[in-house]
Image (cartoon, rainbow, N blue to C red; front, side, top):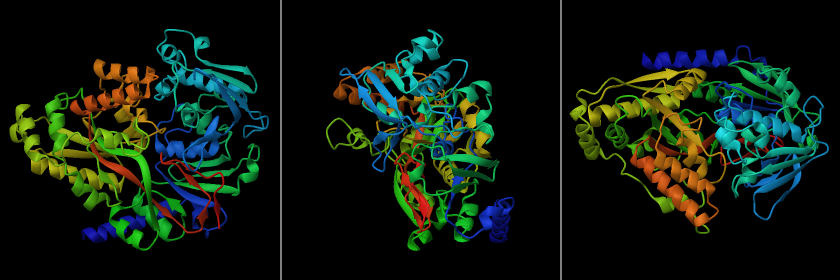
Length: 531
């Protein structure tokens, strides 16, 4: 009966995804149909924080730089730039033919407006801290100075002068990140909901949004005003919006979808064998986030007990099955350490043993809850997804078996889930973090109080001092050392329970060509085409 119910559910979901999505029933043509996963929370690059949003925005906006297929920053809206000898001042020259999708020129003033509005205390951007690299960016965000003191200035329409707090070796990678995108100044200033309606969603990237059918699809058309439009080969694209991996796979195998990354784990071995799935590296860590202010997770021994009582090797072998590696630290492999060719993760090593049940039980007893007795009710929240559900159920059983704790599970729709996590309305929450740029700091600074992504509500002045000193240091040896110390403290405080280091498992039809996939998980479809 259970199998029958599952089969019926699959058919209902597939039908639901197809309904109202008439173009999805057409045979594969000369445009891409990509499954973007969940409904984007917003397409205002100043407000967004999630991967679904970042991938959509990468098609409709462009920064001063863009990432190439080696994840190196190359010229984007800026055709060239100069860096002062002290590494503090960048002077960008914008392309004369850079235009918005409505035909207006993209100017340096648009960048200055976008960055300063992101930093504005009244704007409340979760990612404002990503702009703290600008001189006085943090002070302005905290309301200590006026906007004119921030280190970004439009010298004229085509010249943007940026002054940094400290030399930042990866700054040109940051300028490819969505928080550094420009916005169309007149539109955004006049209408705070401009990014919610395709009629007012003006971008400067290779595509423009022509329709947004919520919880169904986003439709794109080639932006004829884009400065490099000659390289855009597809006249249109569709992003399918569904949380269901089962629906996504059904659409892929029914030739209603060409590319997607939400795969039912149980199907991965078959899909690999059939050559329908590609697995690539991804700079990301899957983890459970503890709210350190809510009982019983305001007790570090409880957090450690829950962390140690997870069998990660069993999860990646039996549940996720896409080549992930058990995570016993926070920063994933793939980021450079101090020495040439060295890896931050390999140098830092692991911080605890996987599935250390004996220590977990001892710590829970020391916290006053031997065998789980007396522990307050615990609920783990996760966003709707077959994969997240399967992992949550596996961990729930491990905590029951290893700690004697009965944990309730609660799935939430994406927007509700993000809101719960941001407001700290949870005890334990599923989480995943993908690096925004190629430096360990993209993980290390996530848990400082001013970070809009510090869902754990973690505050530790020692940790904050280590992060601040690492950001201020011009000495690469000292900077890396400080980040190692900060990560160790984060692990000692058991702010999060790492589960595994991601891989990127992608369903892809053989005729999809020309796209670029960053190790940060962002797809760039500018030069993609269907063979």
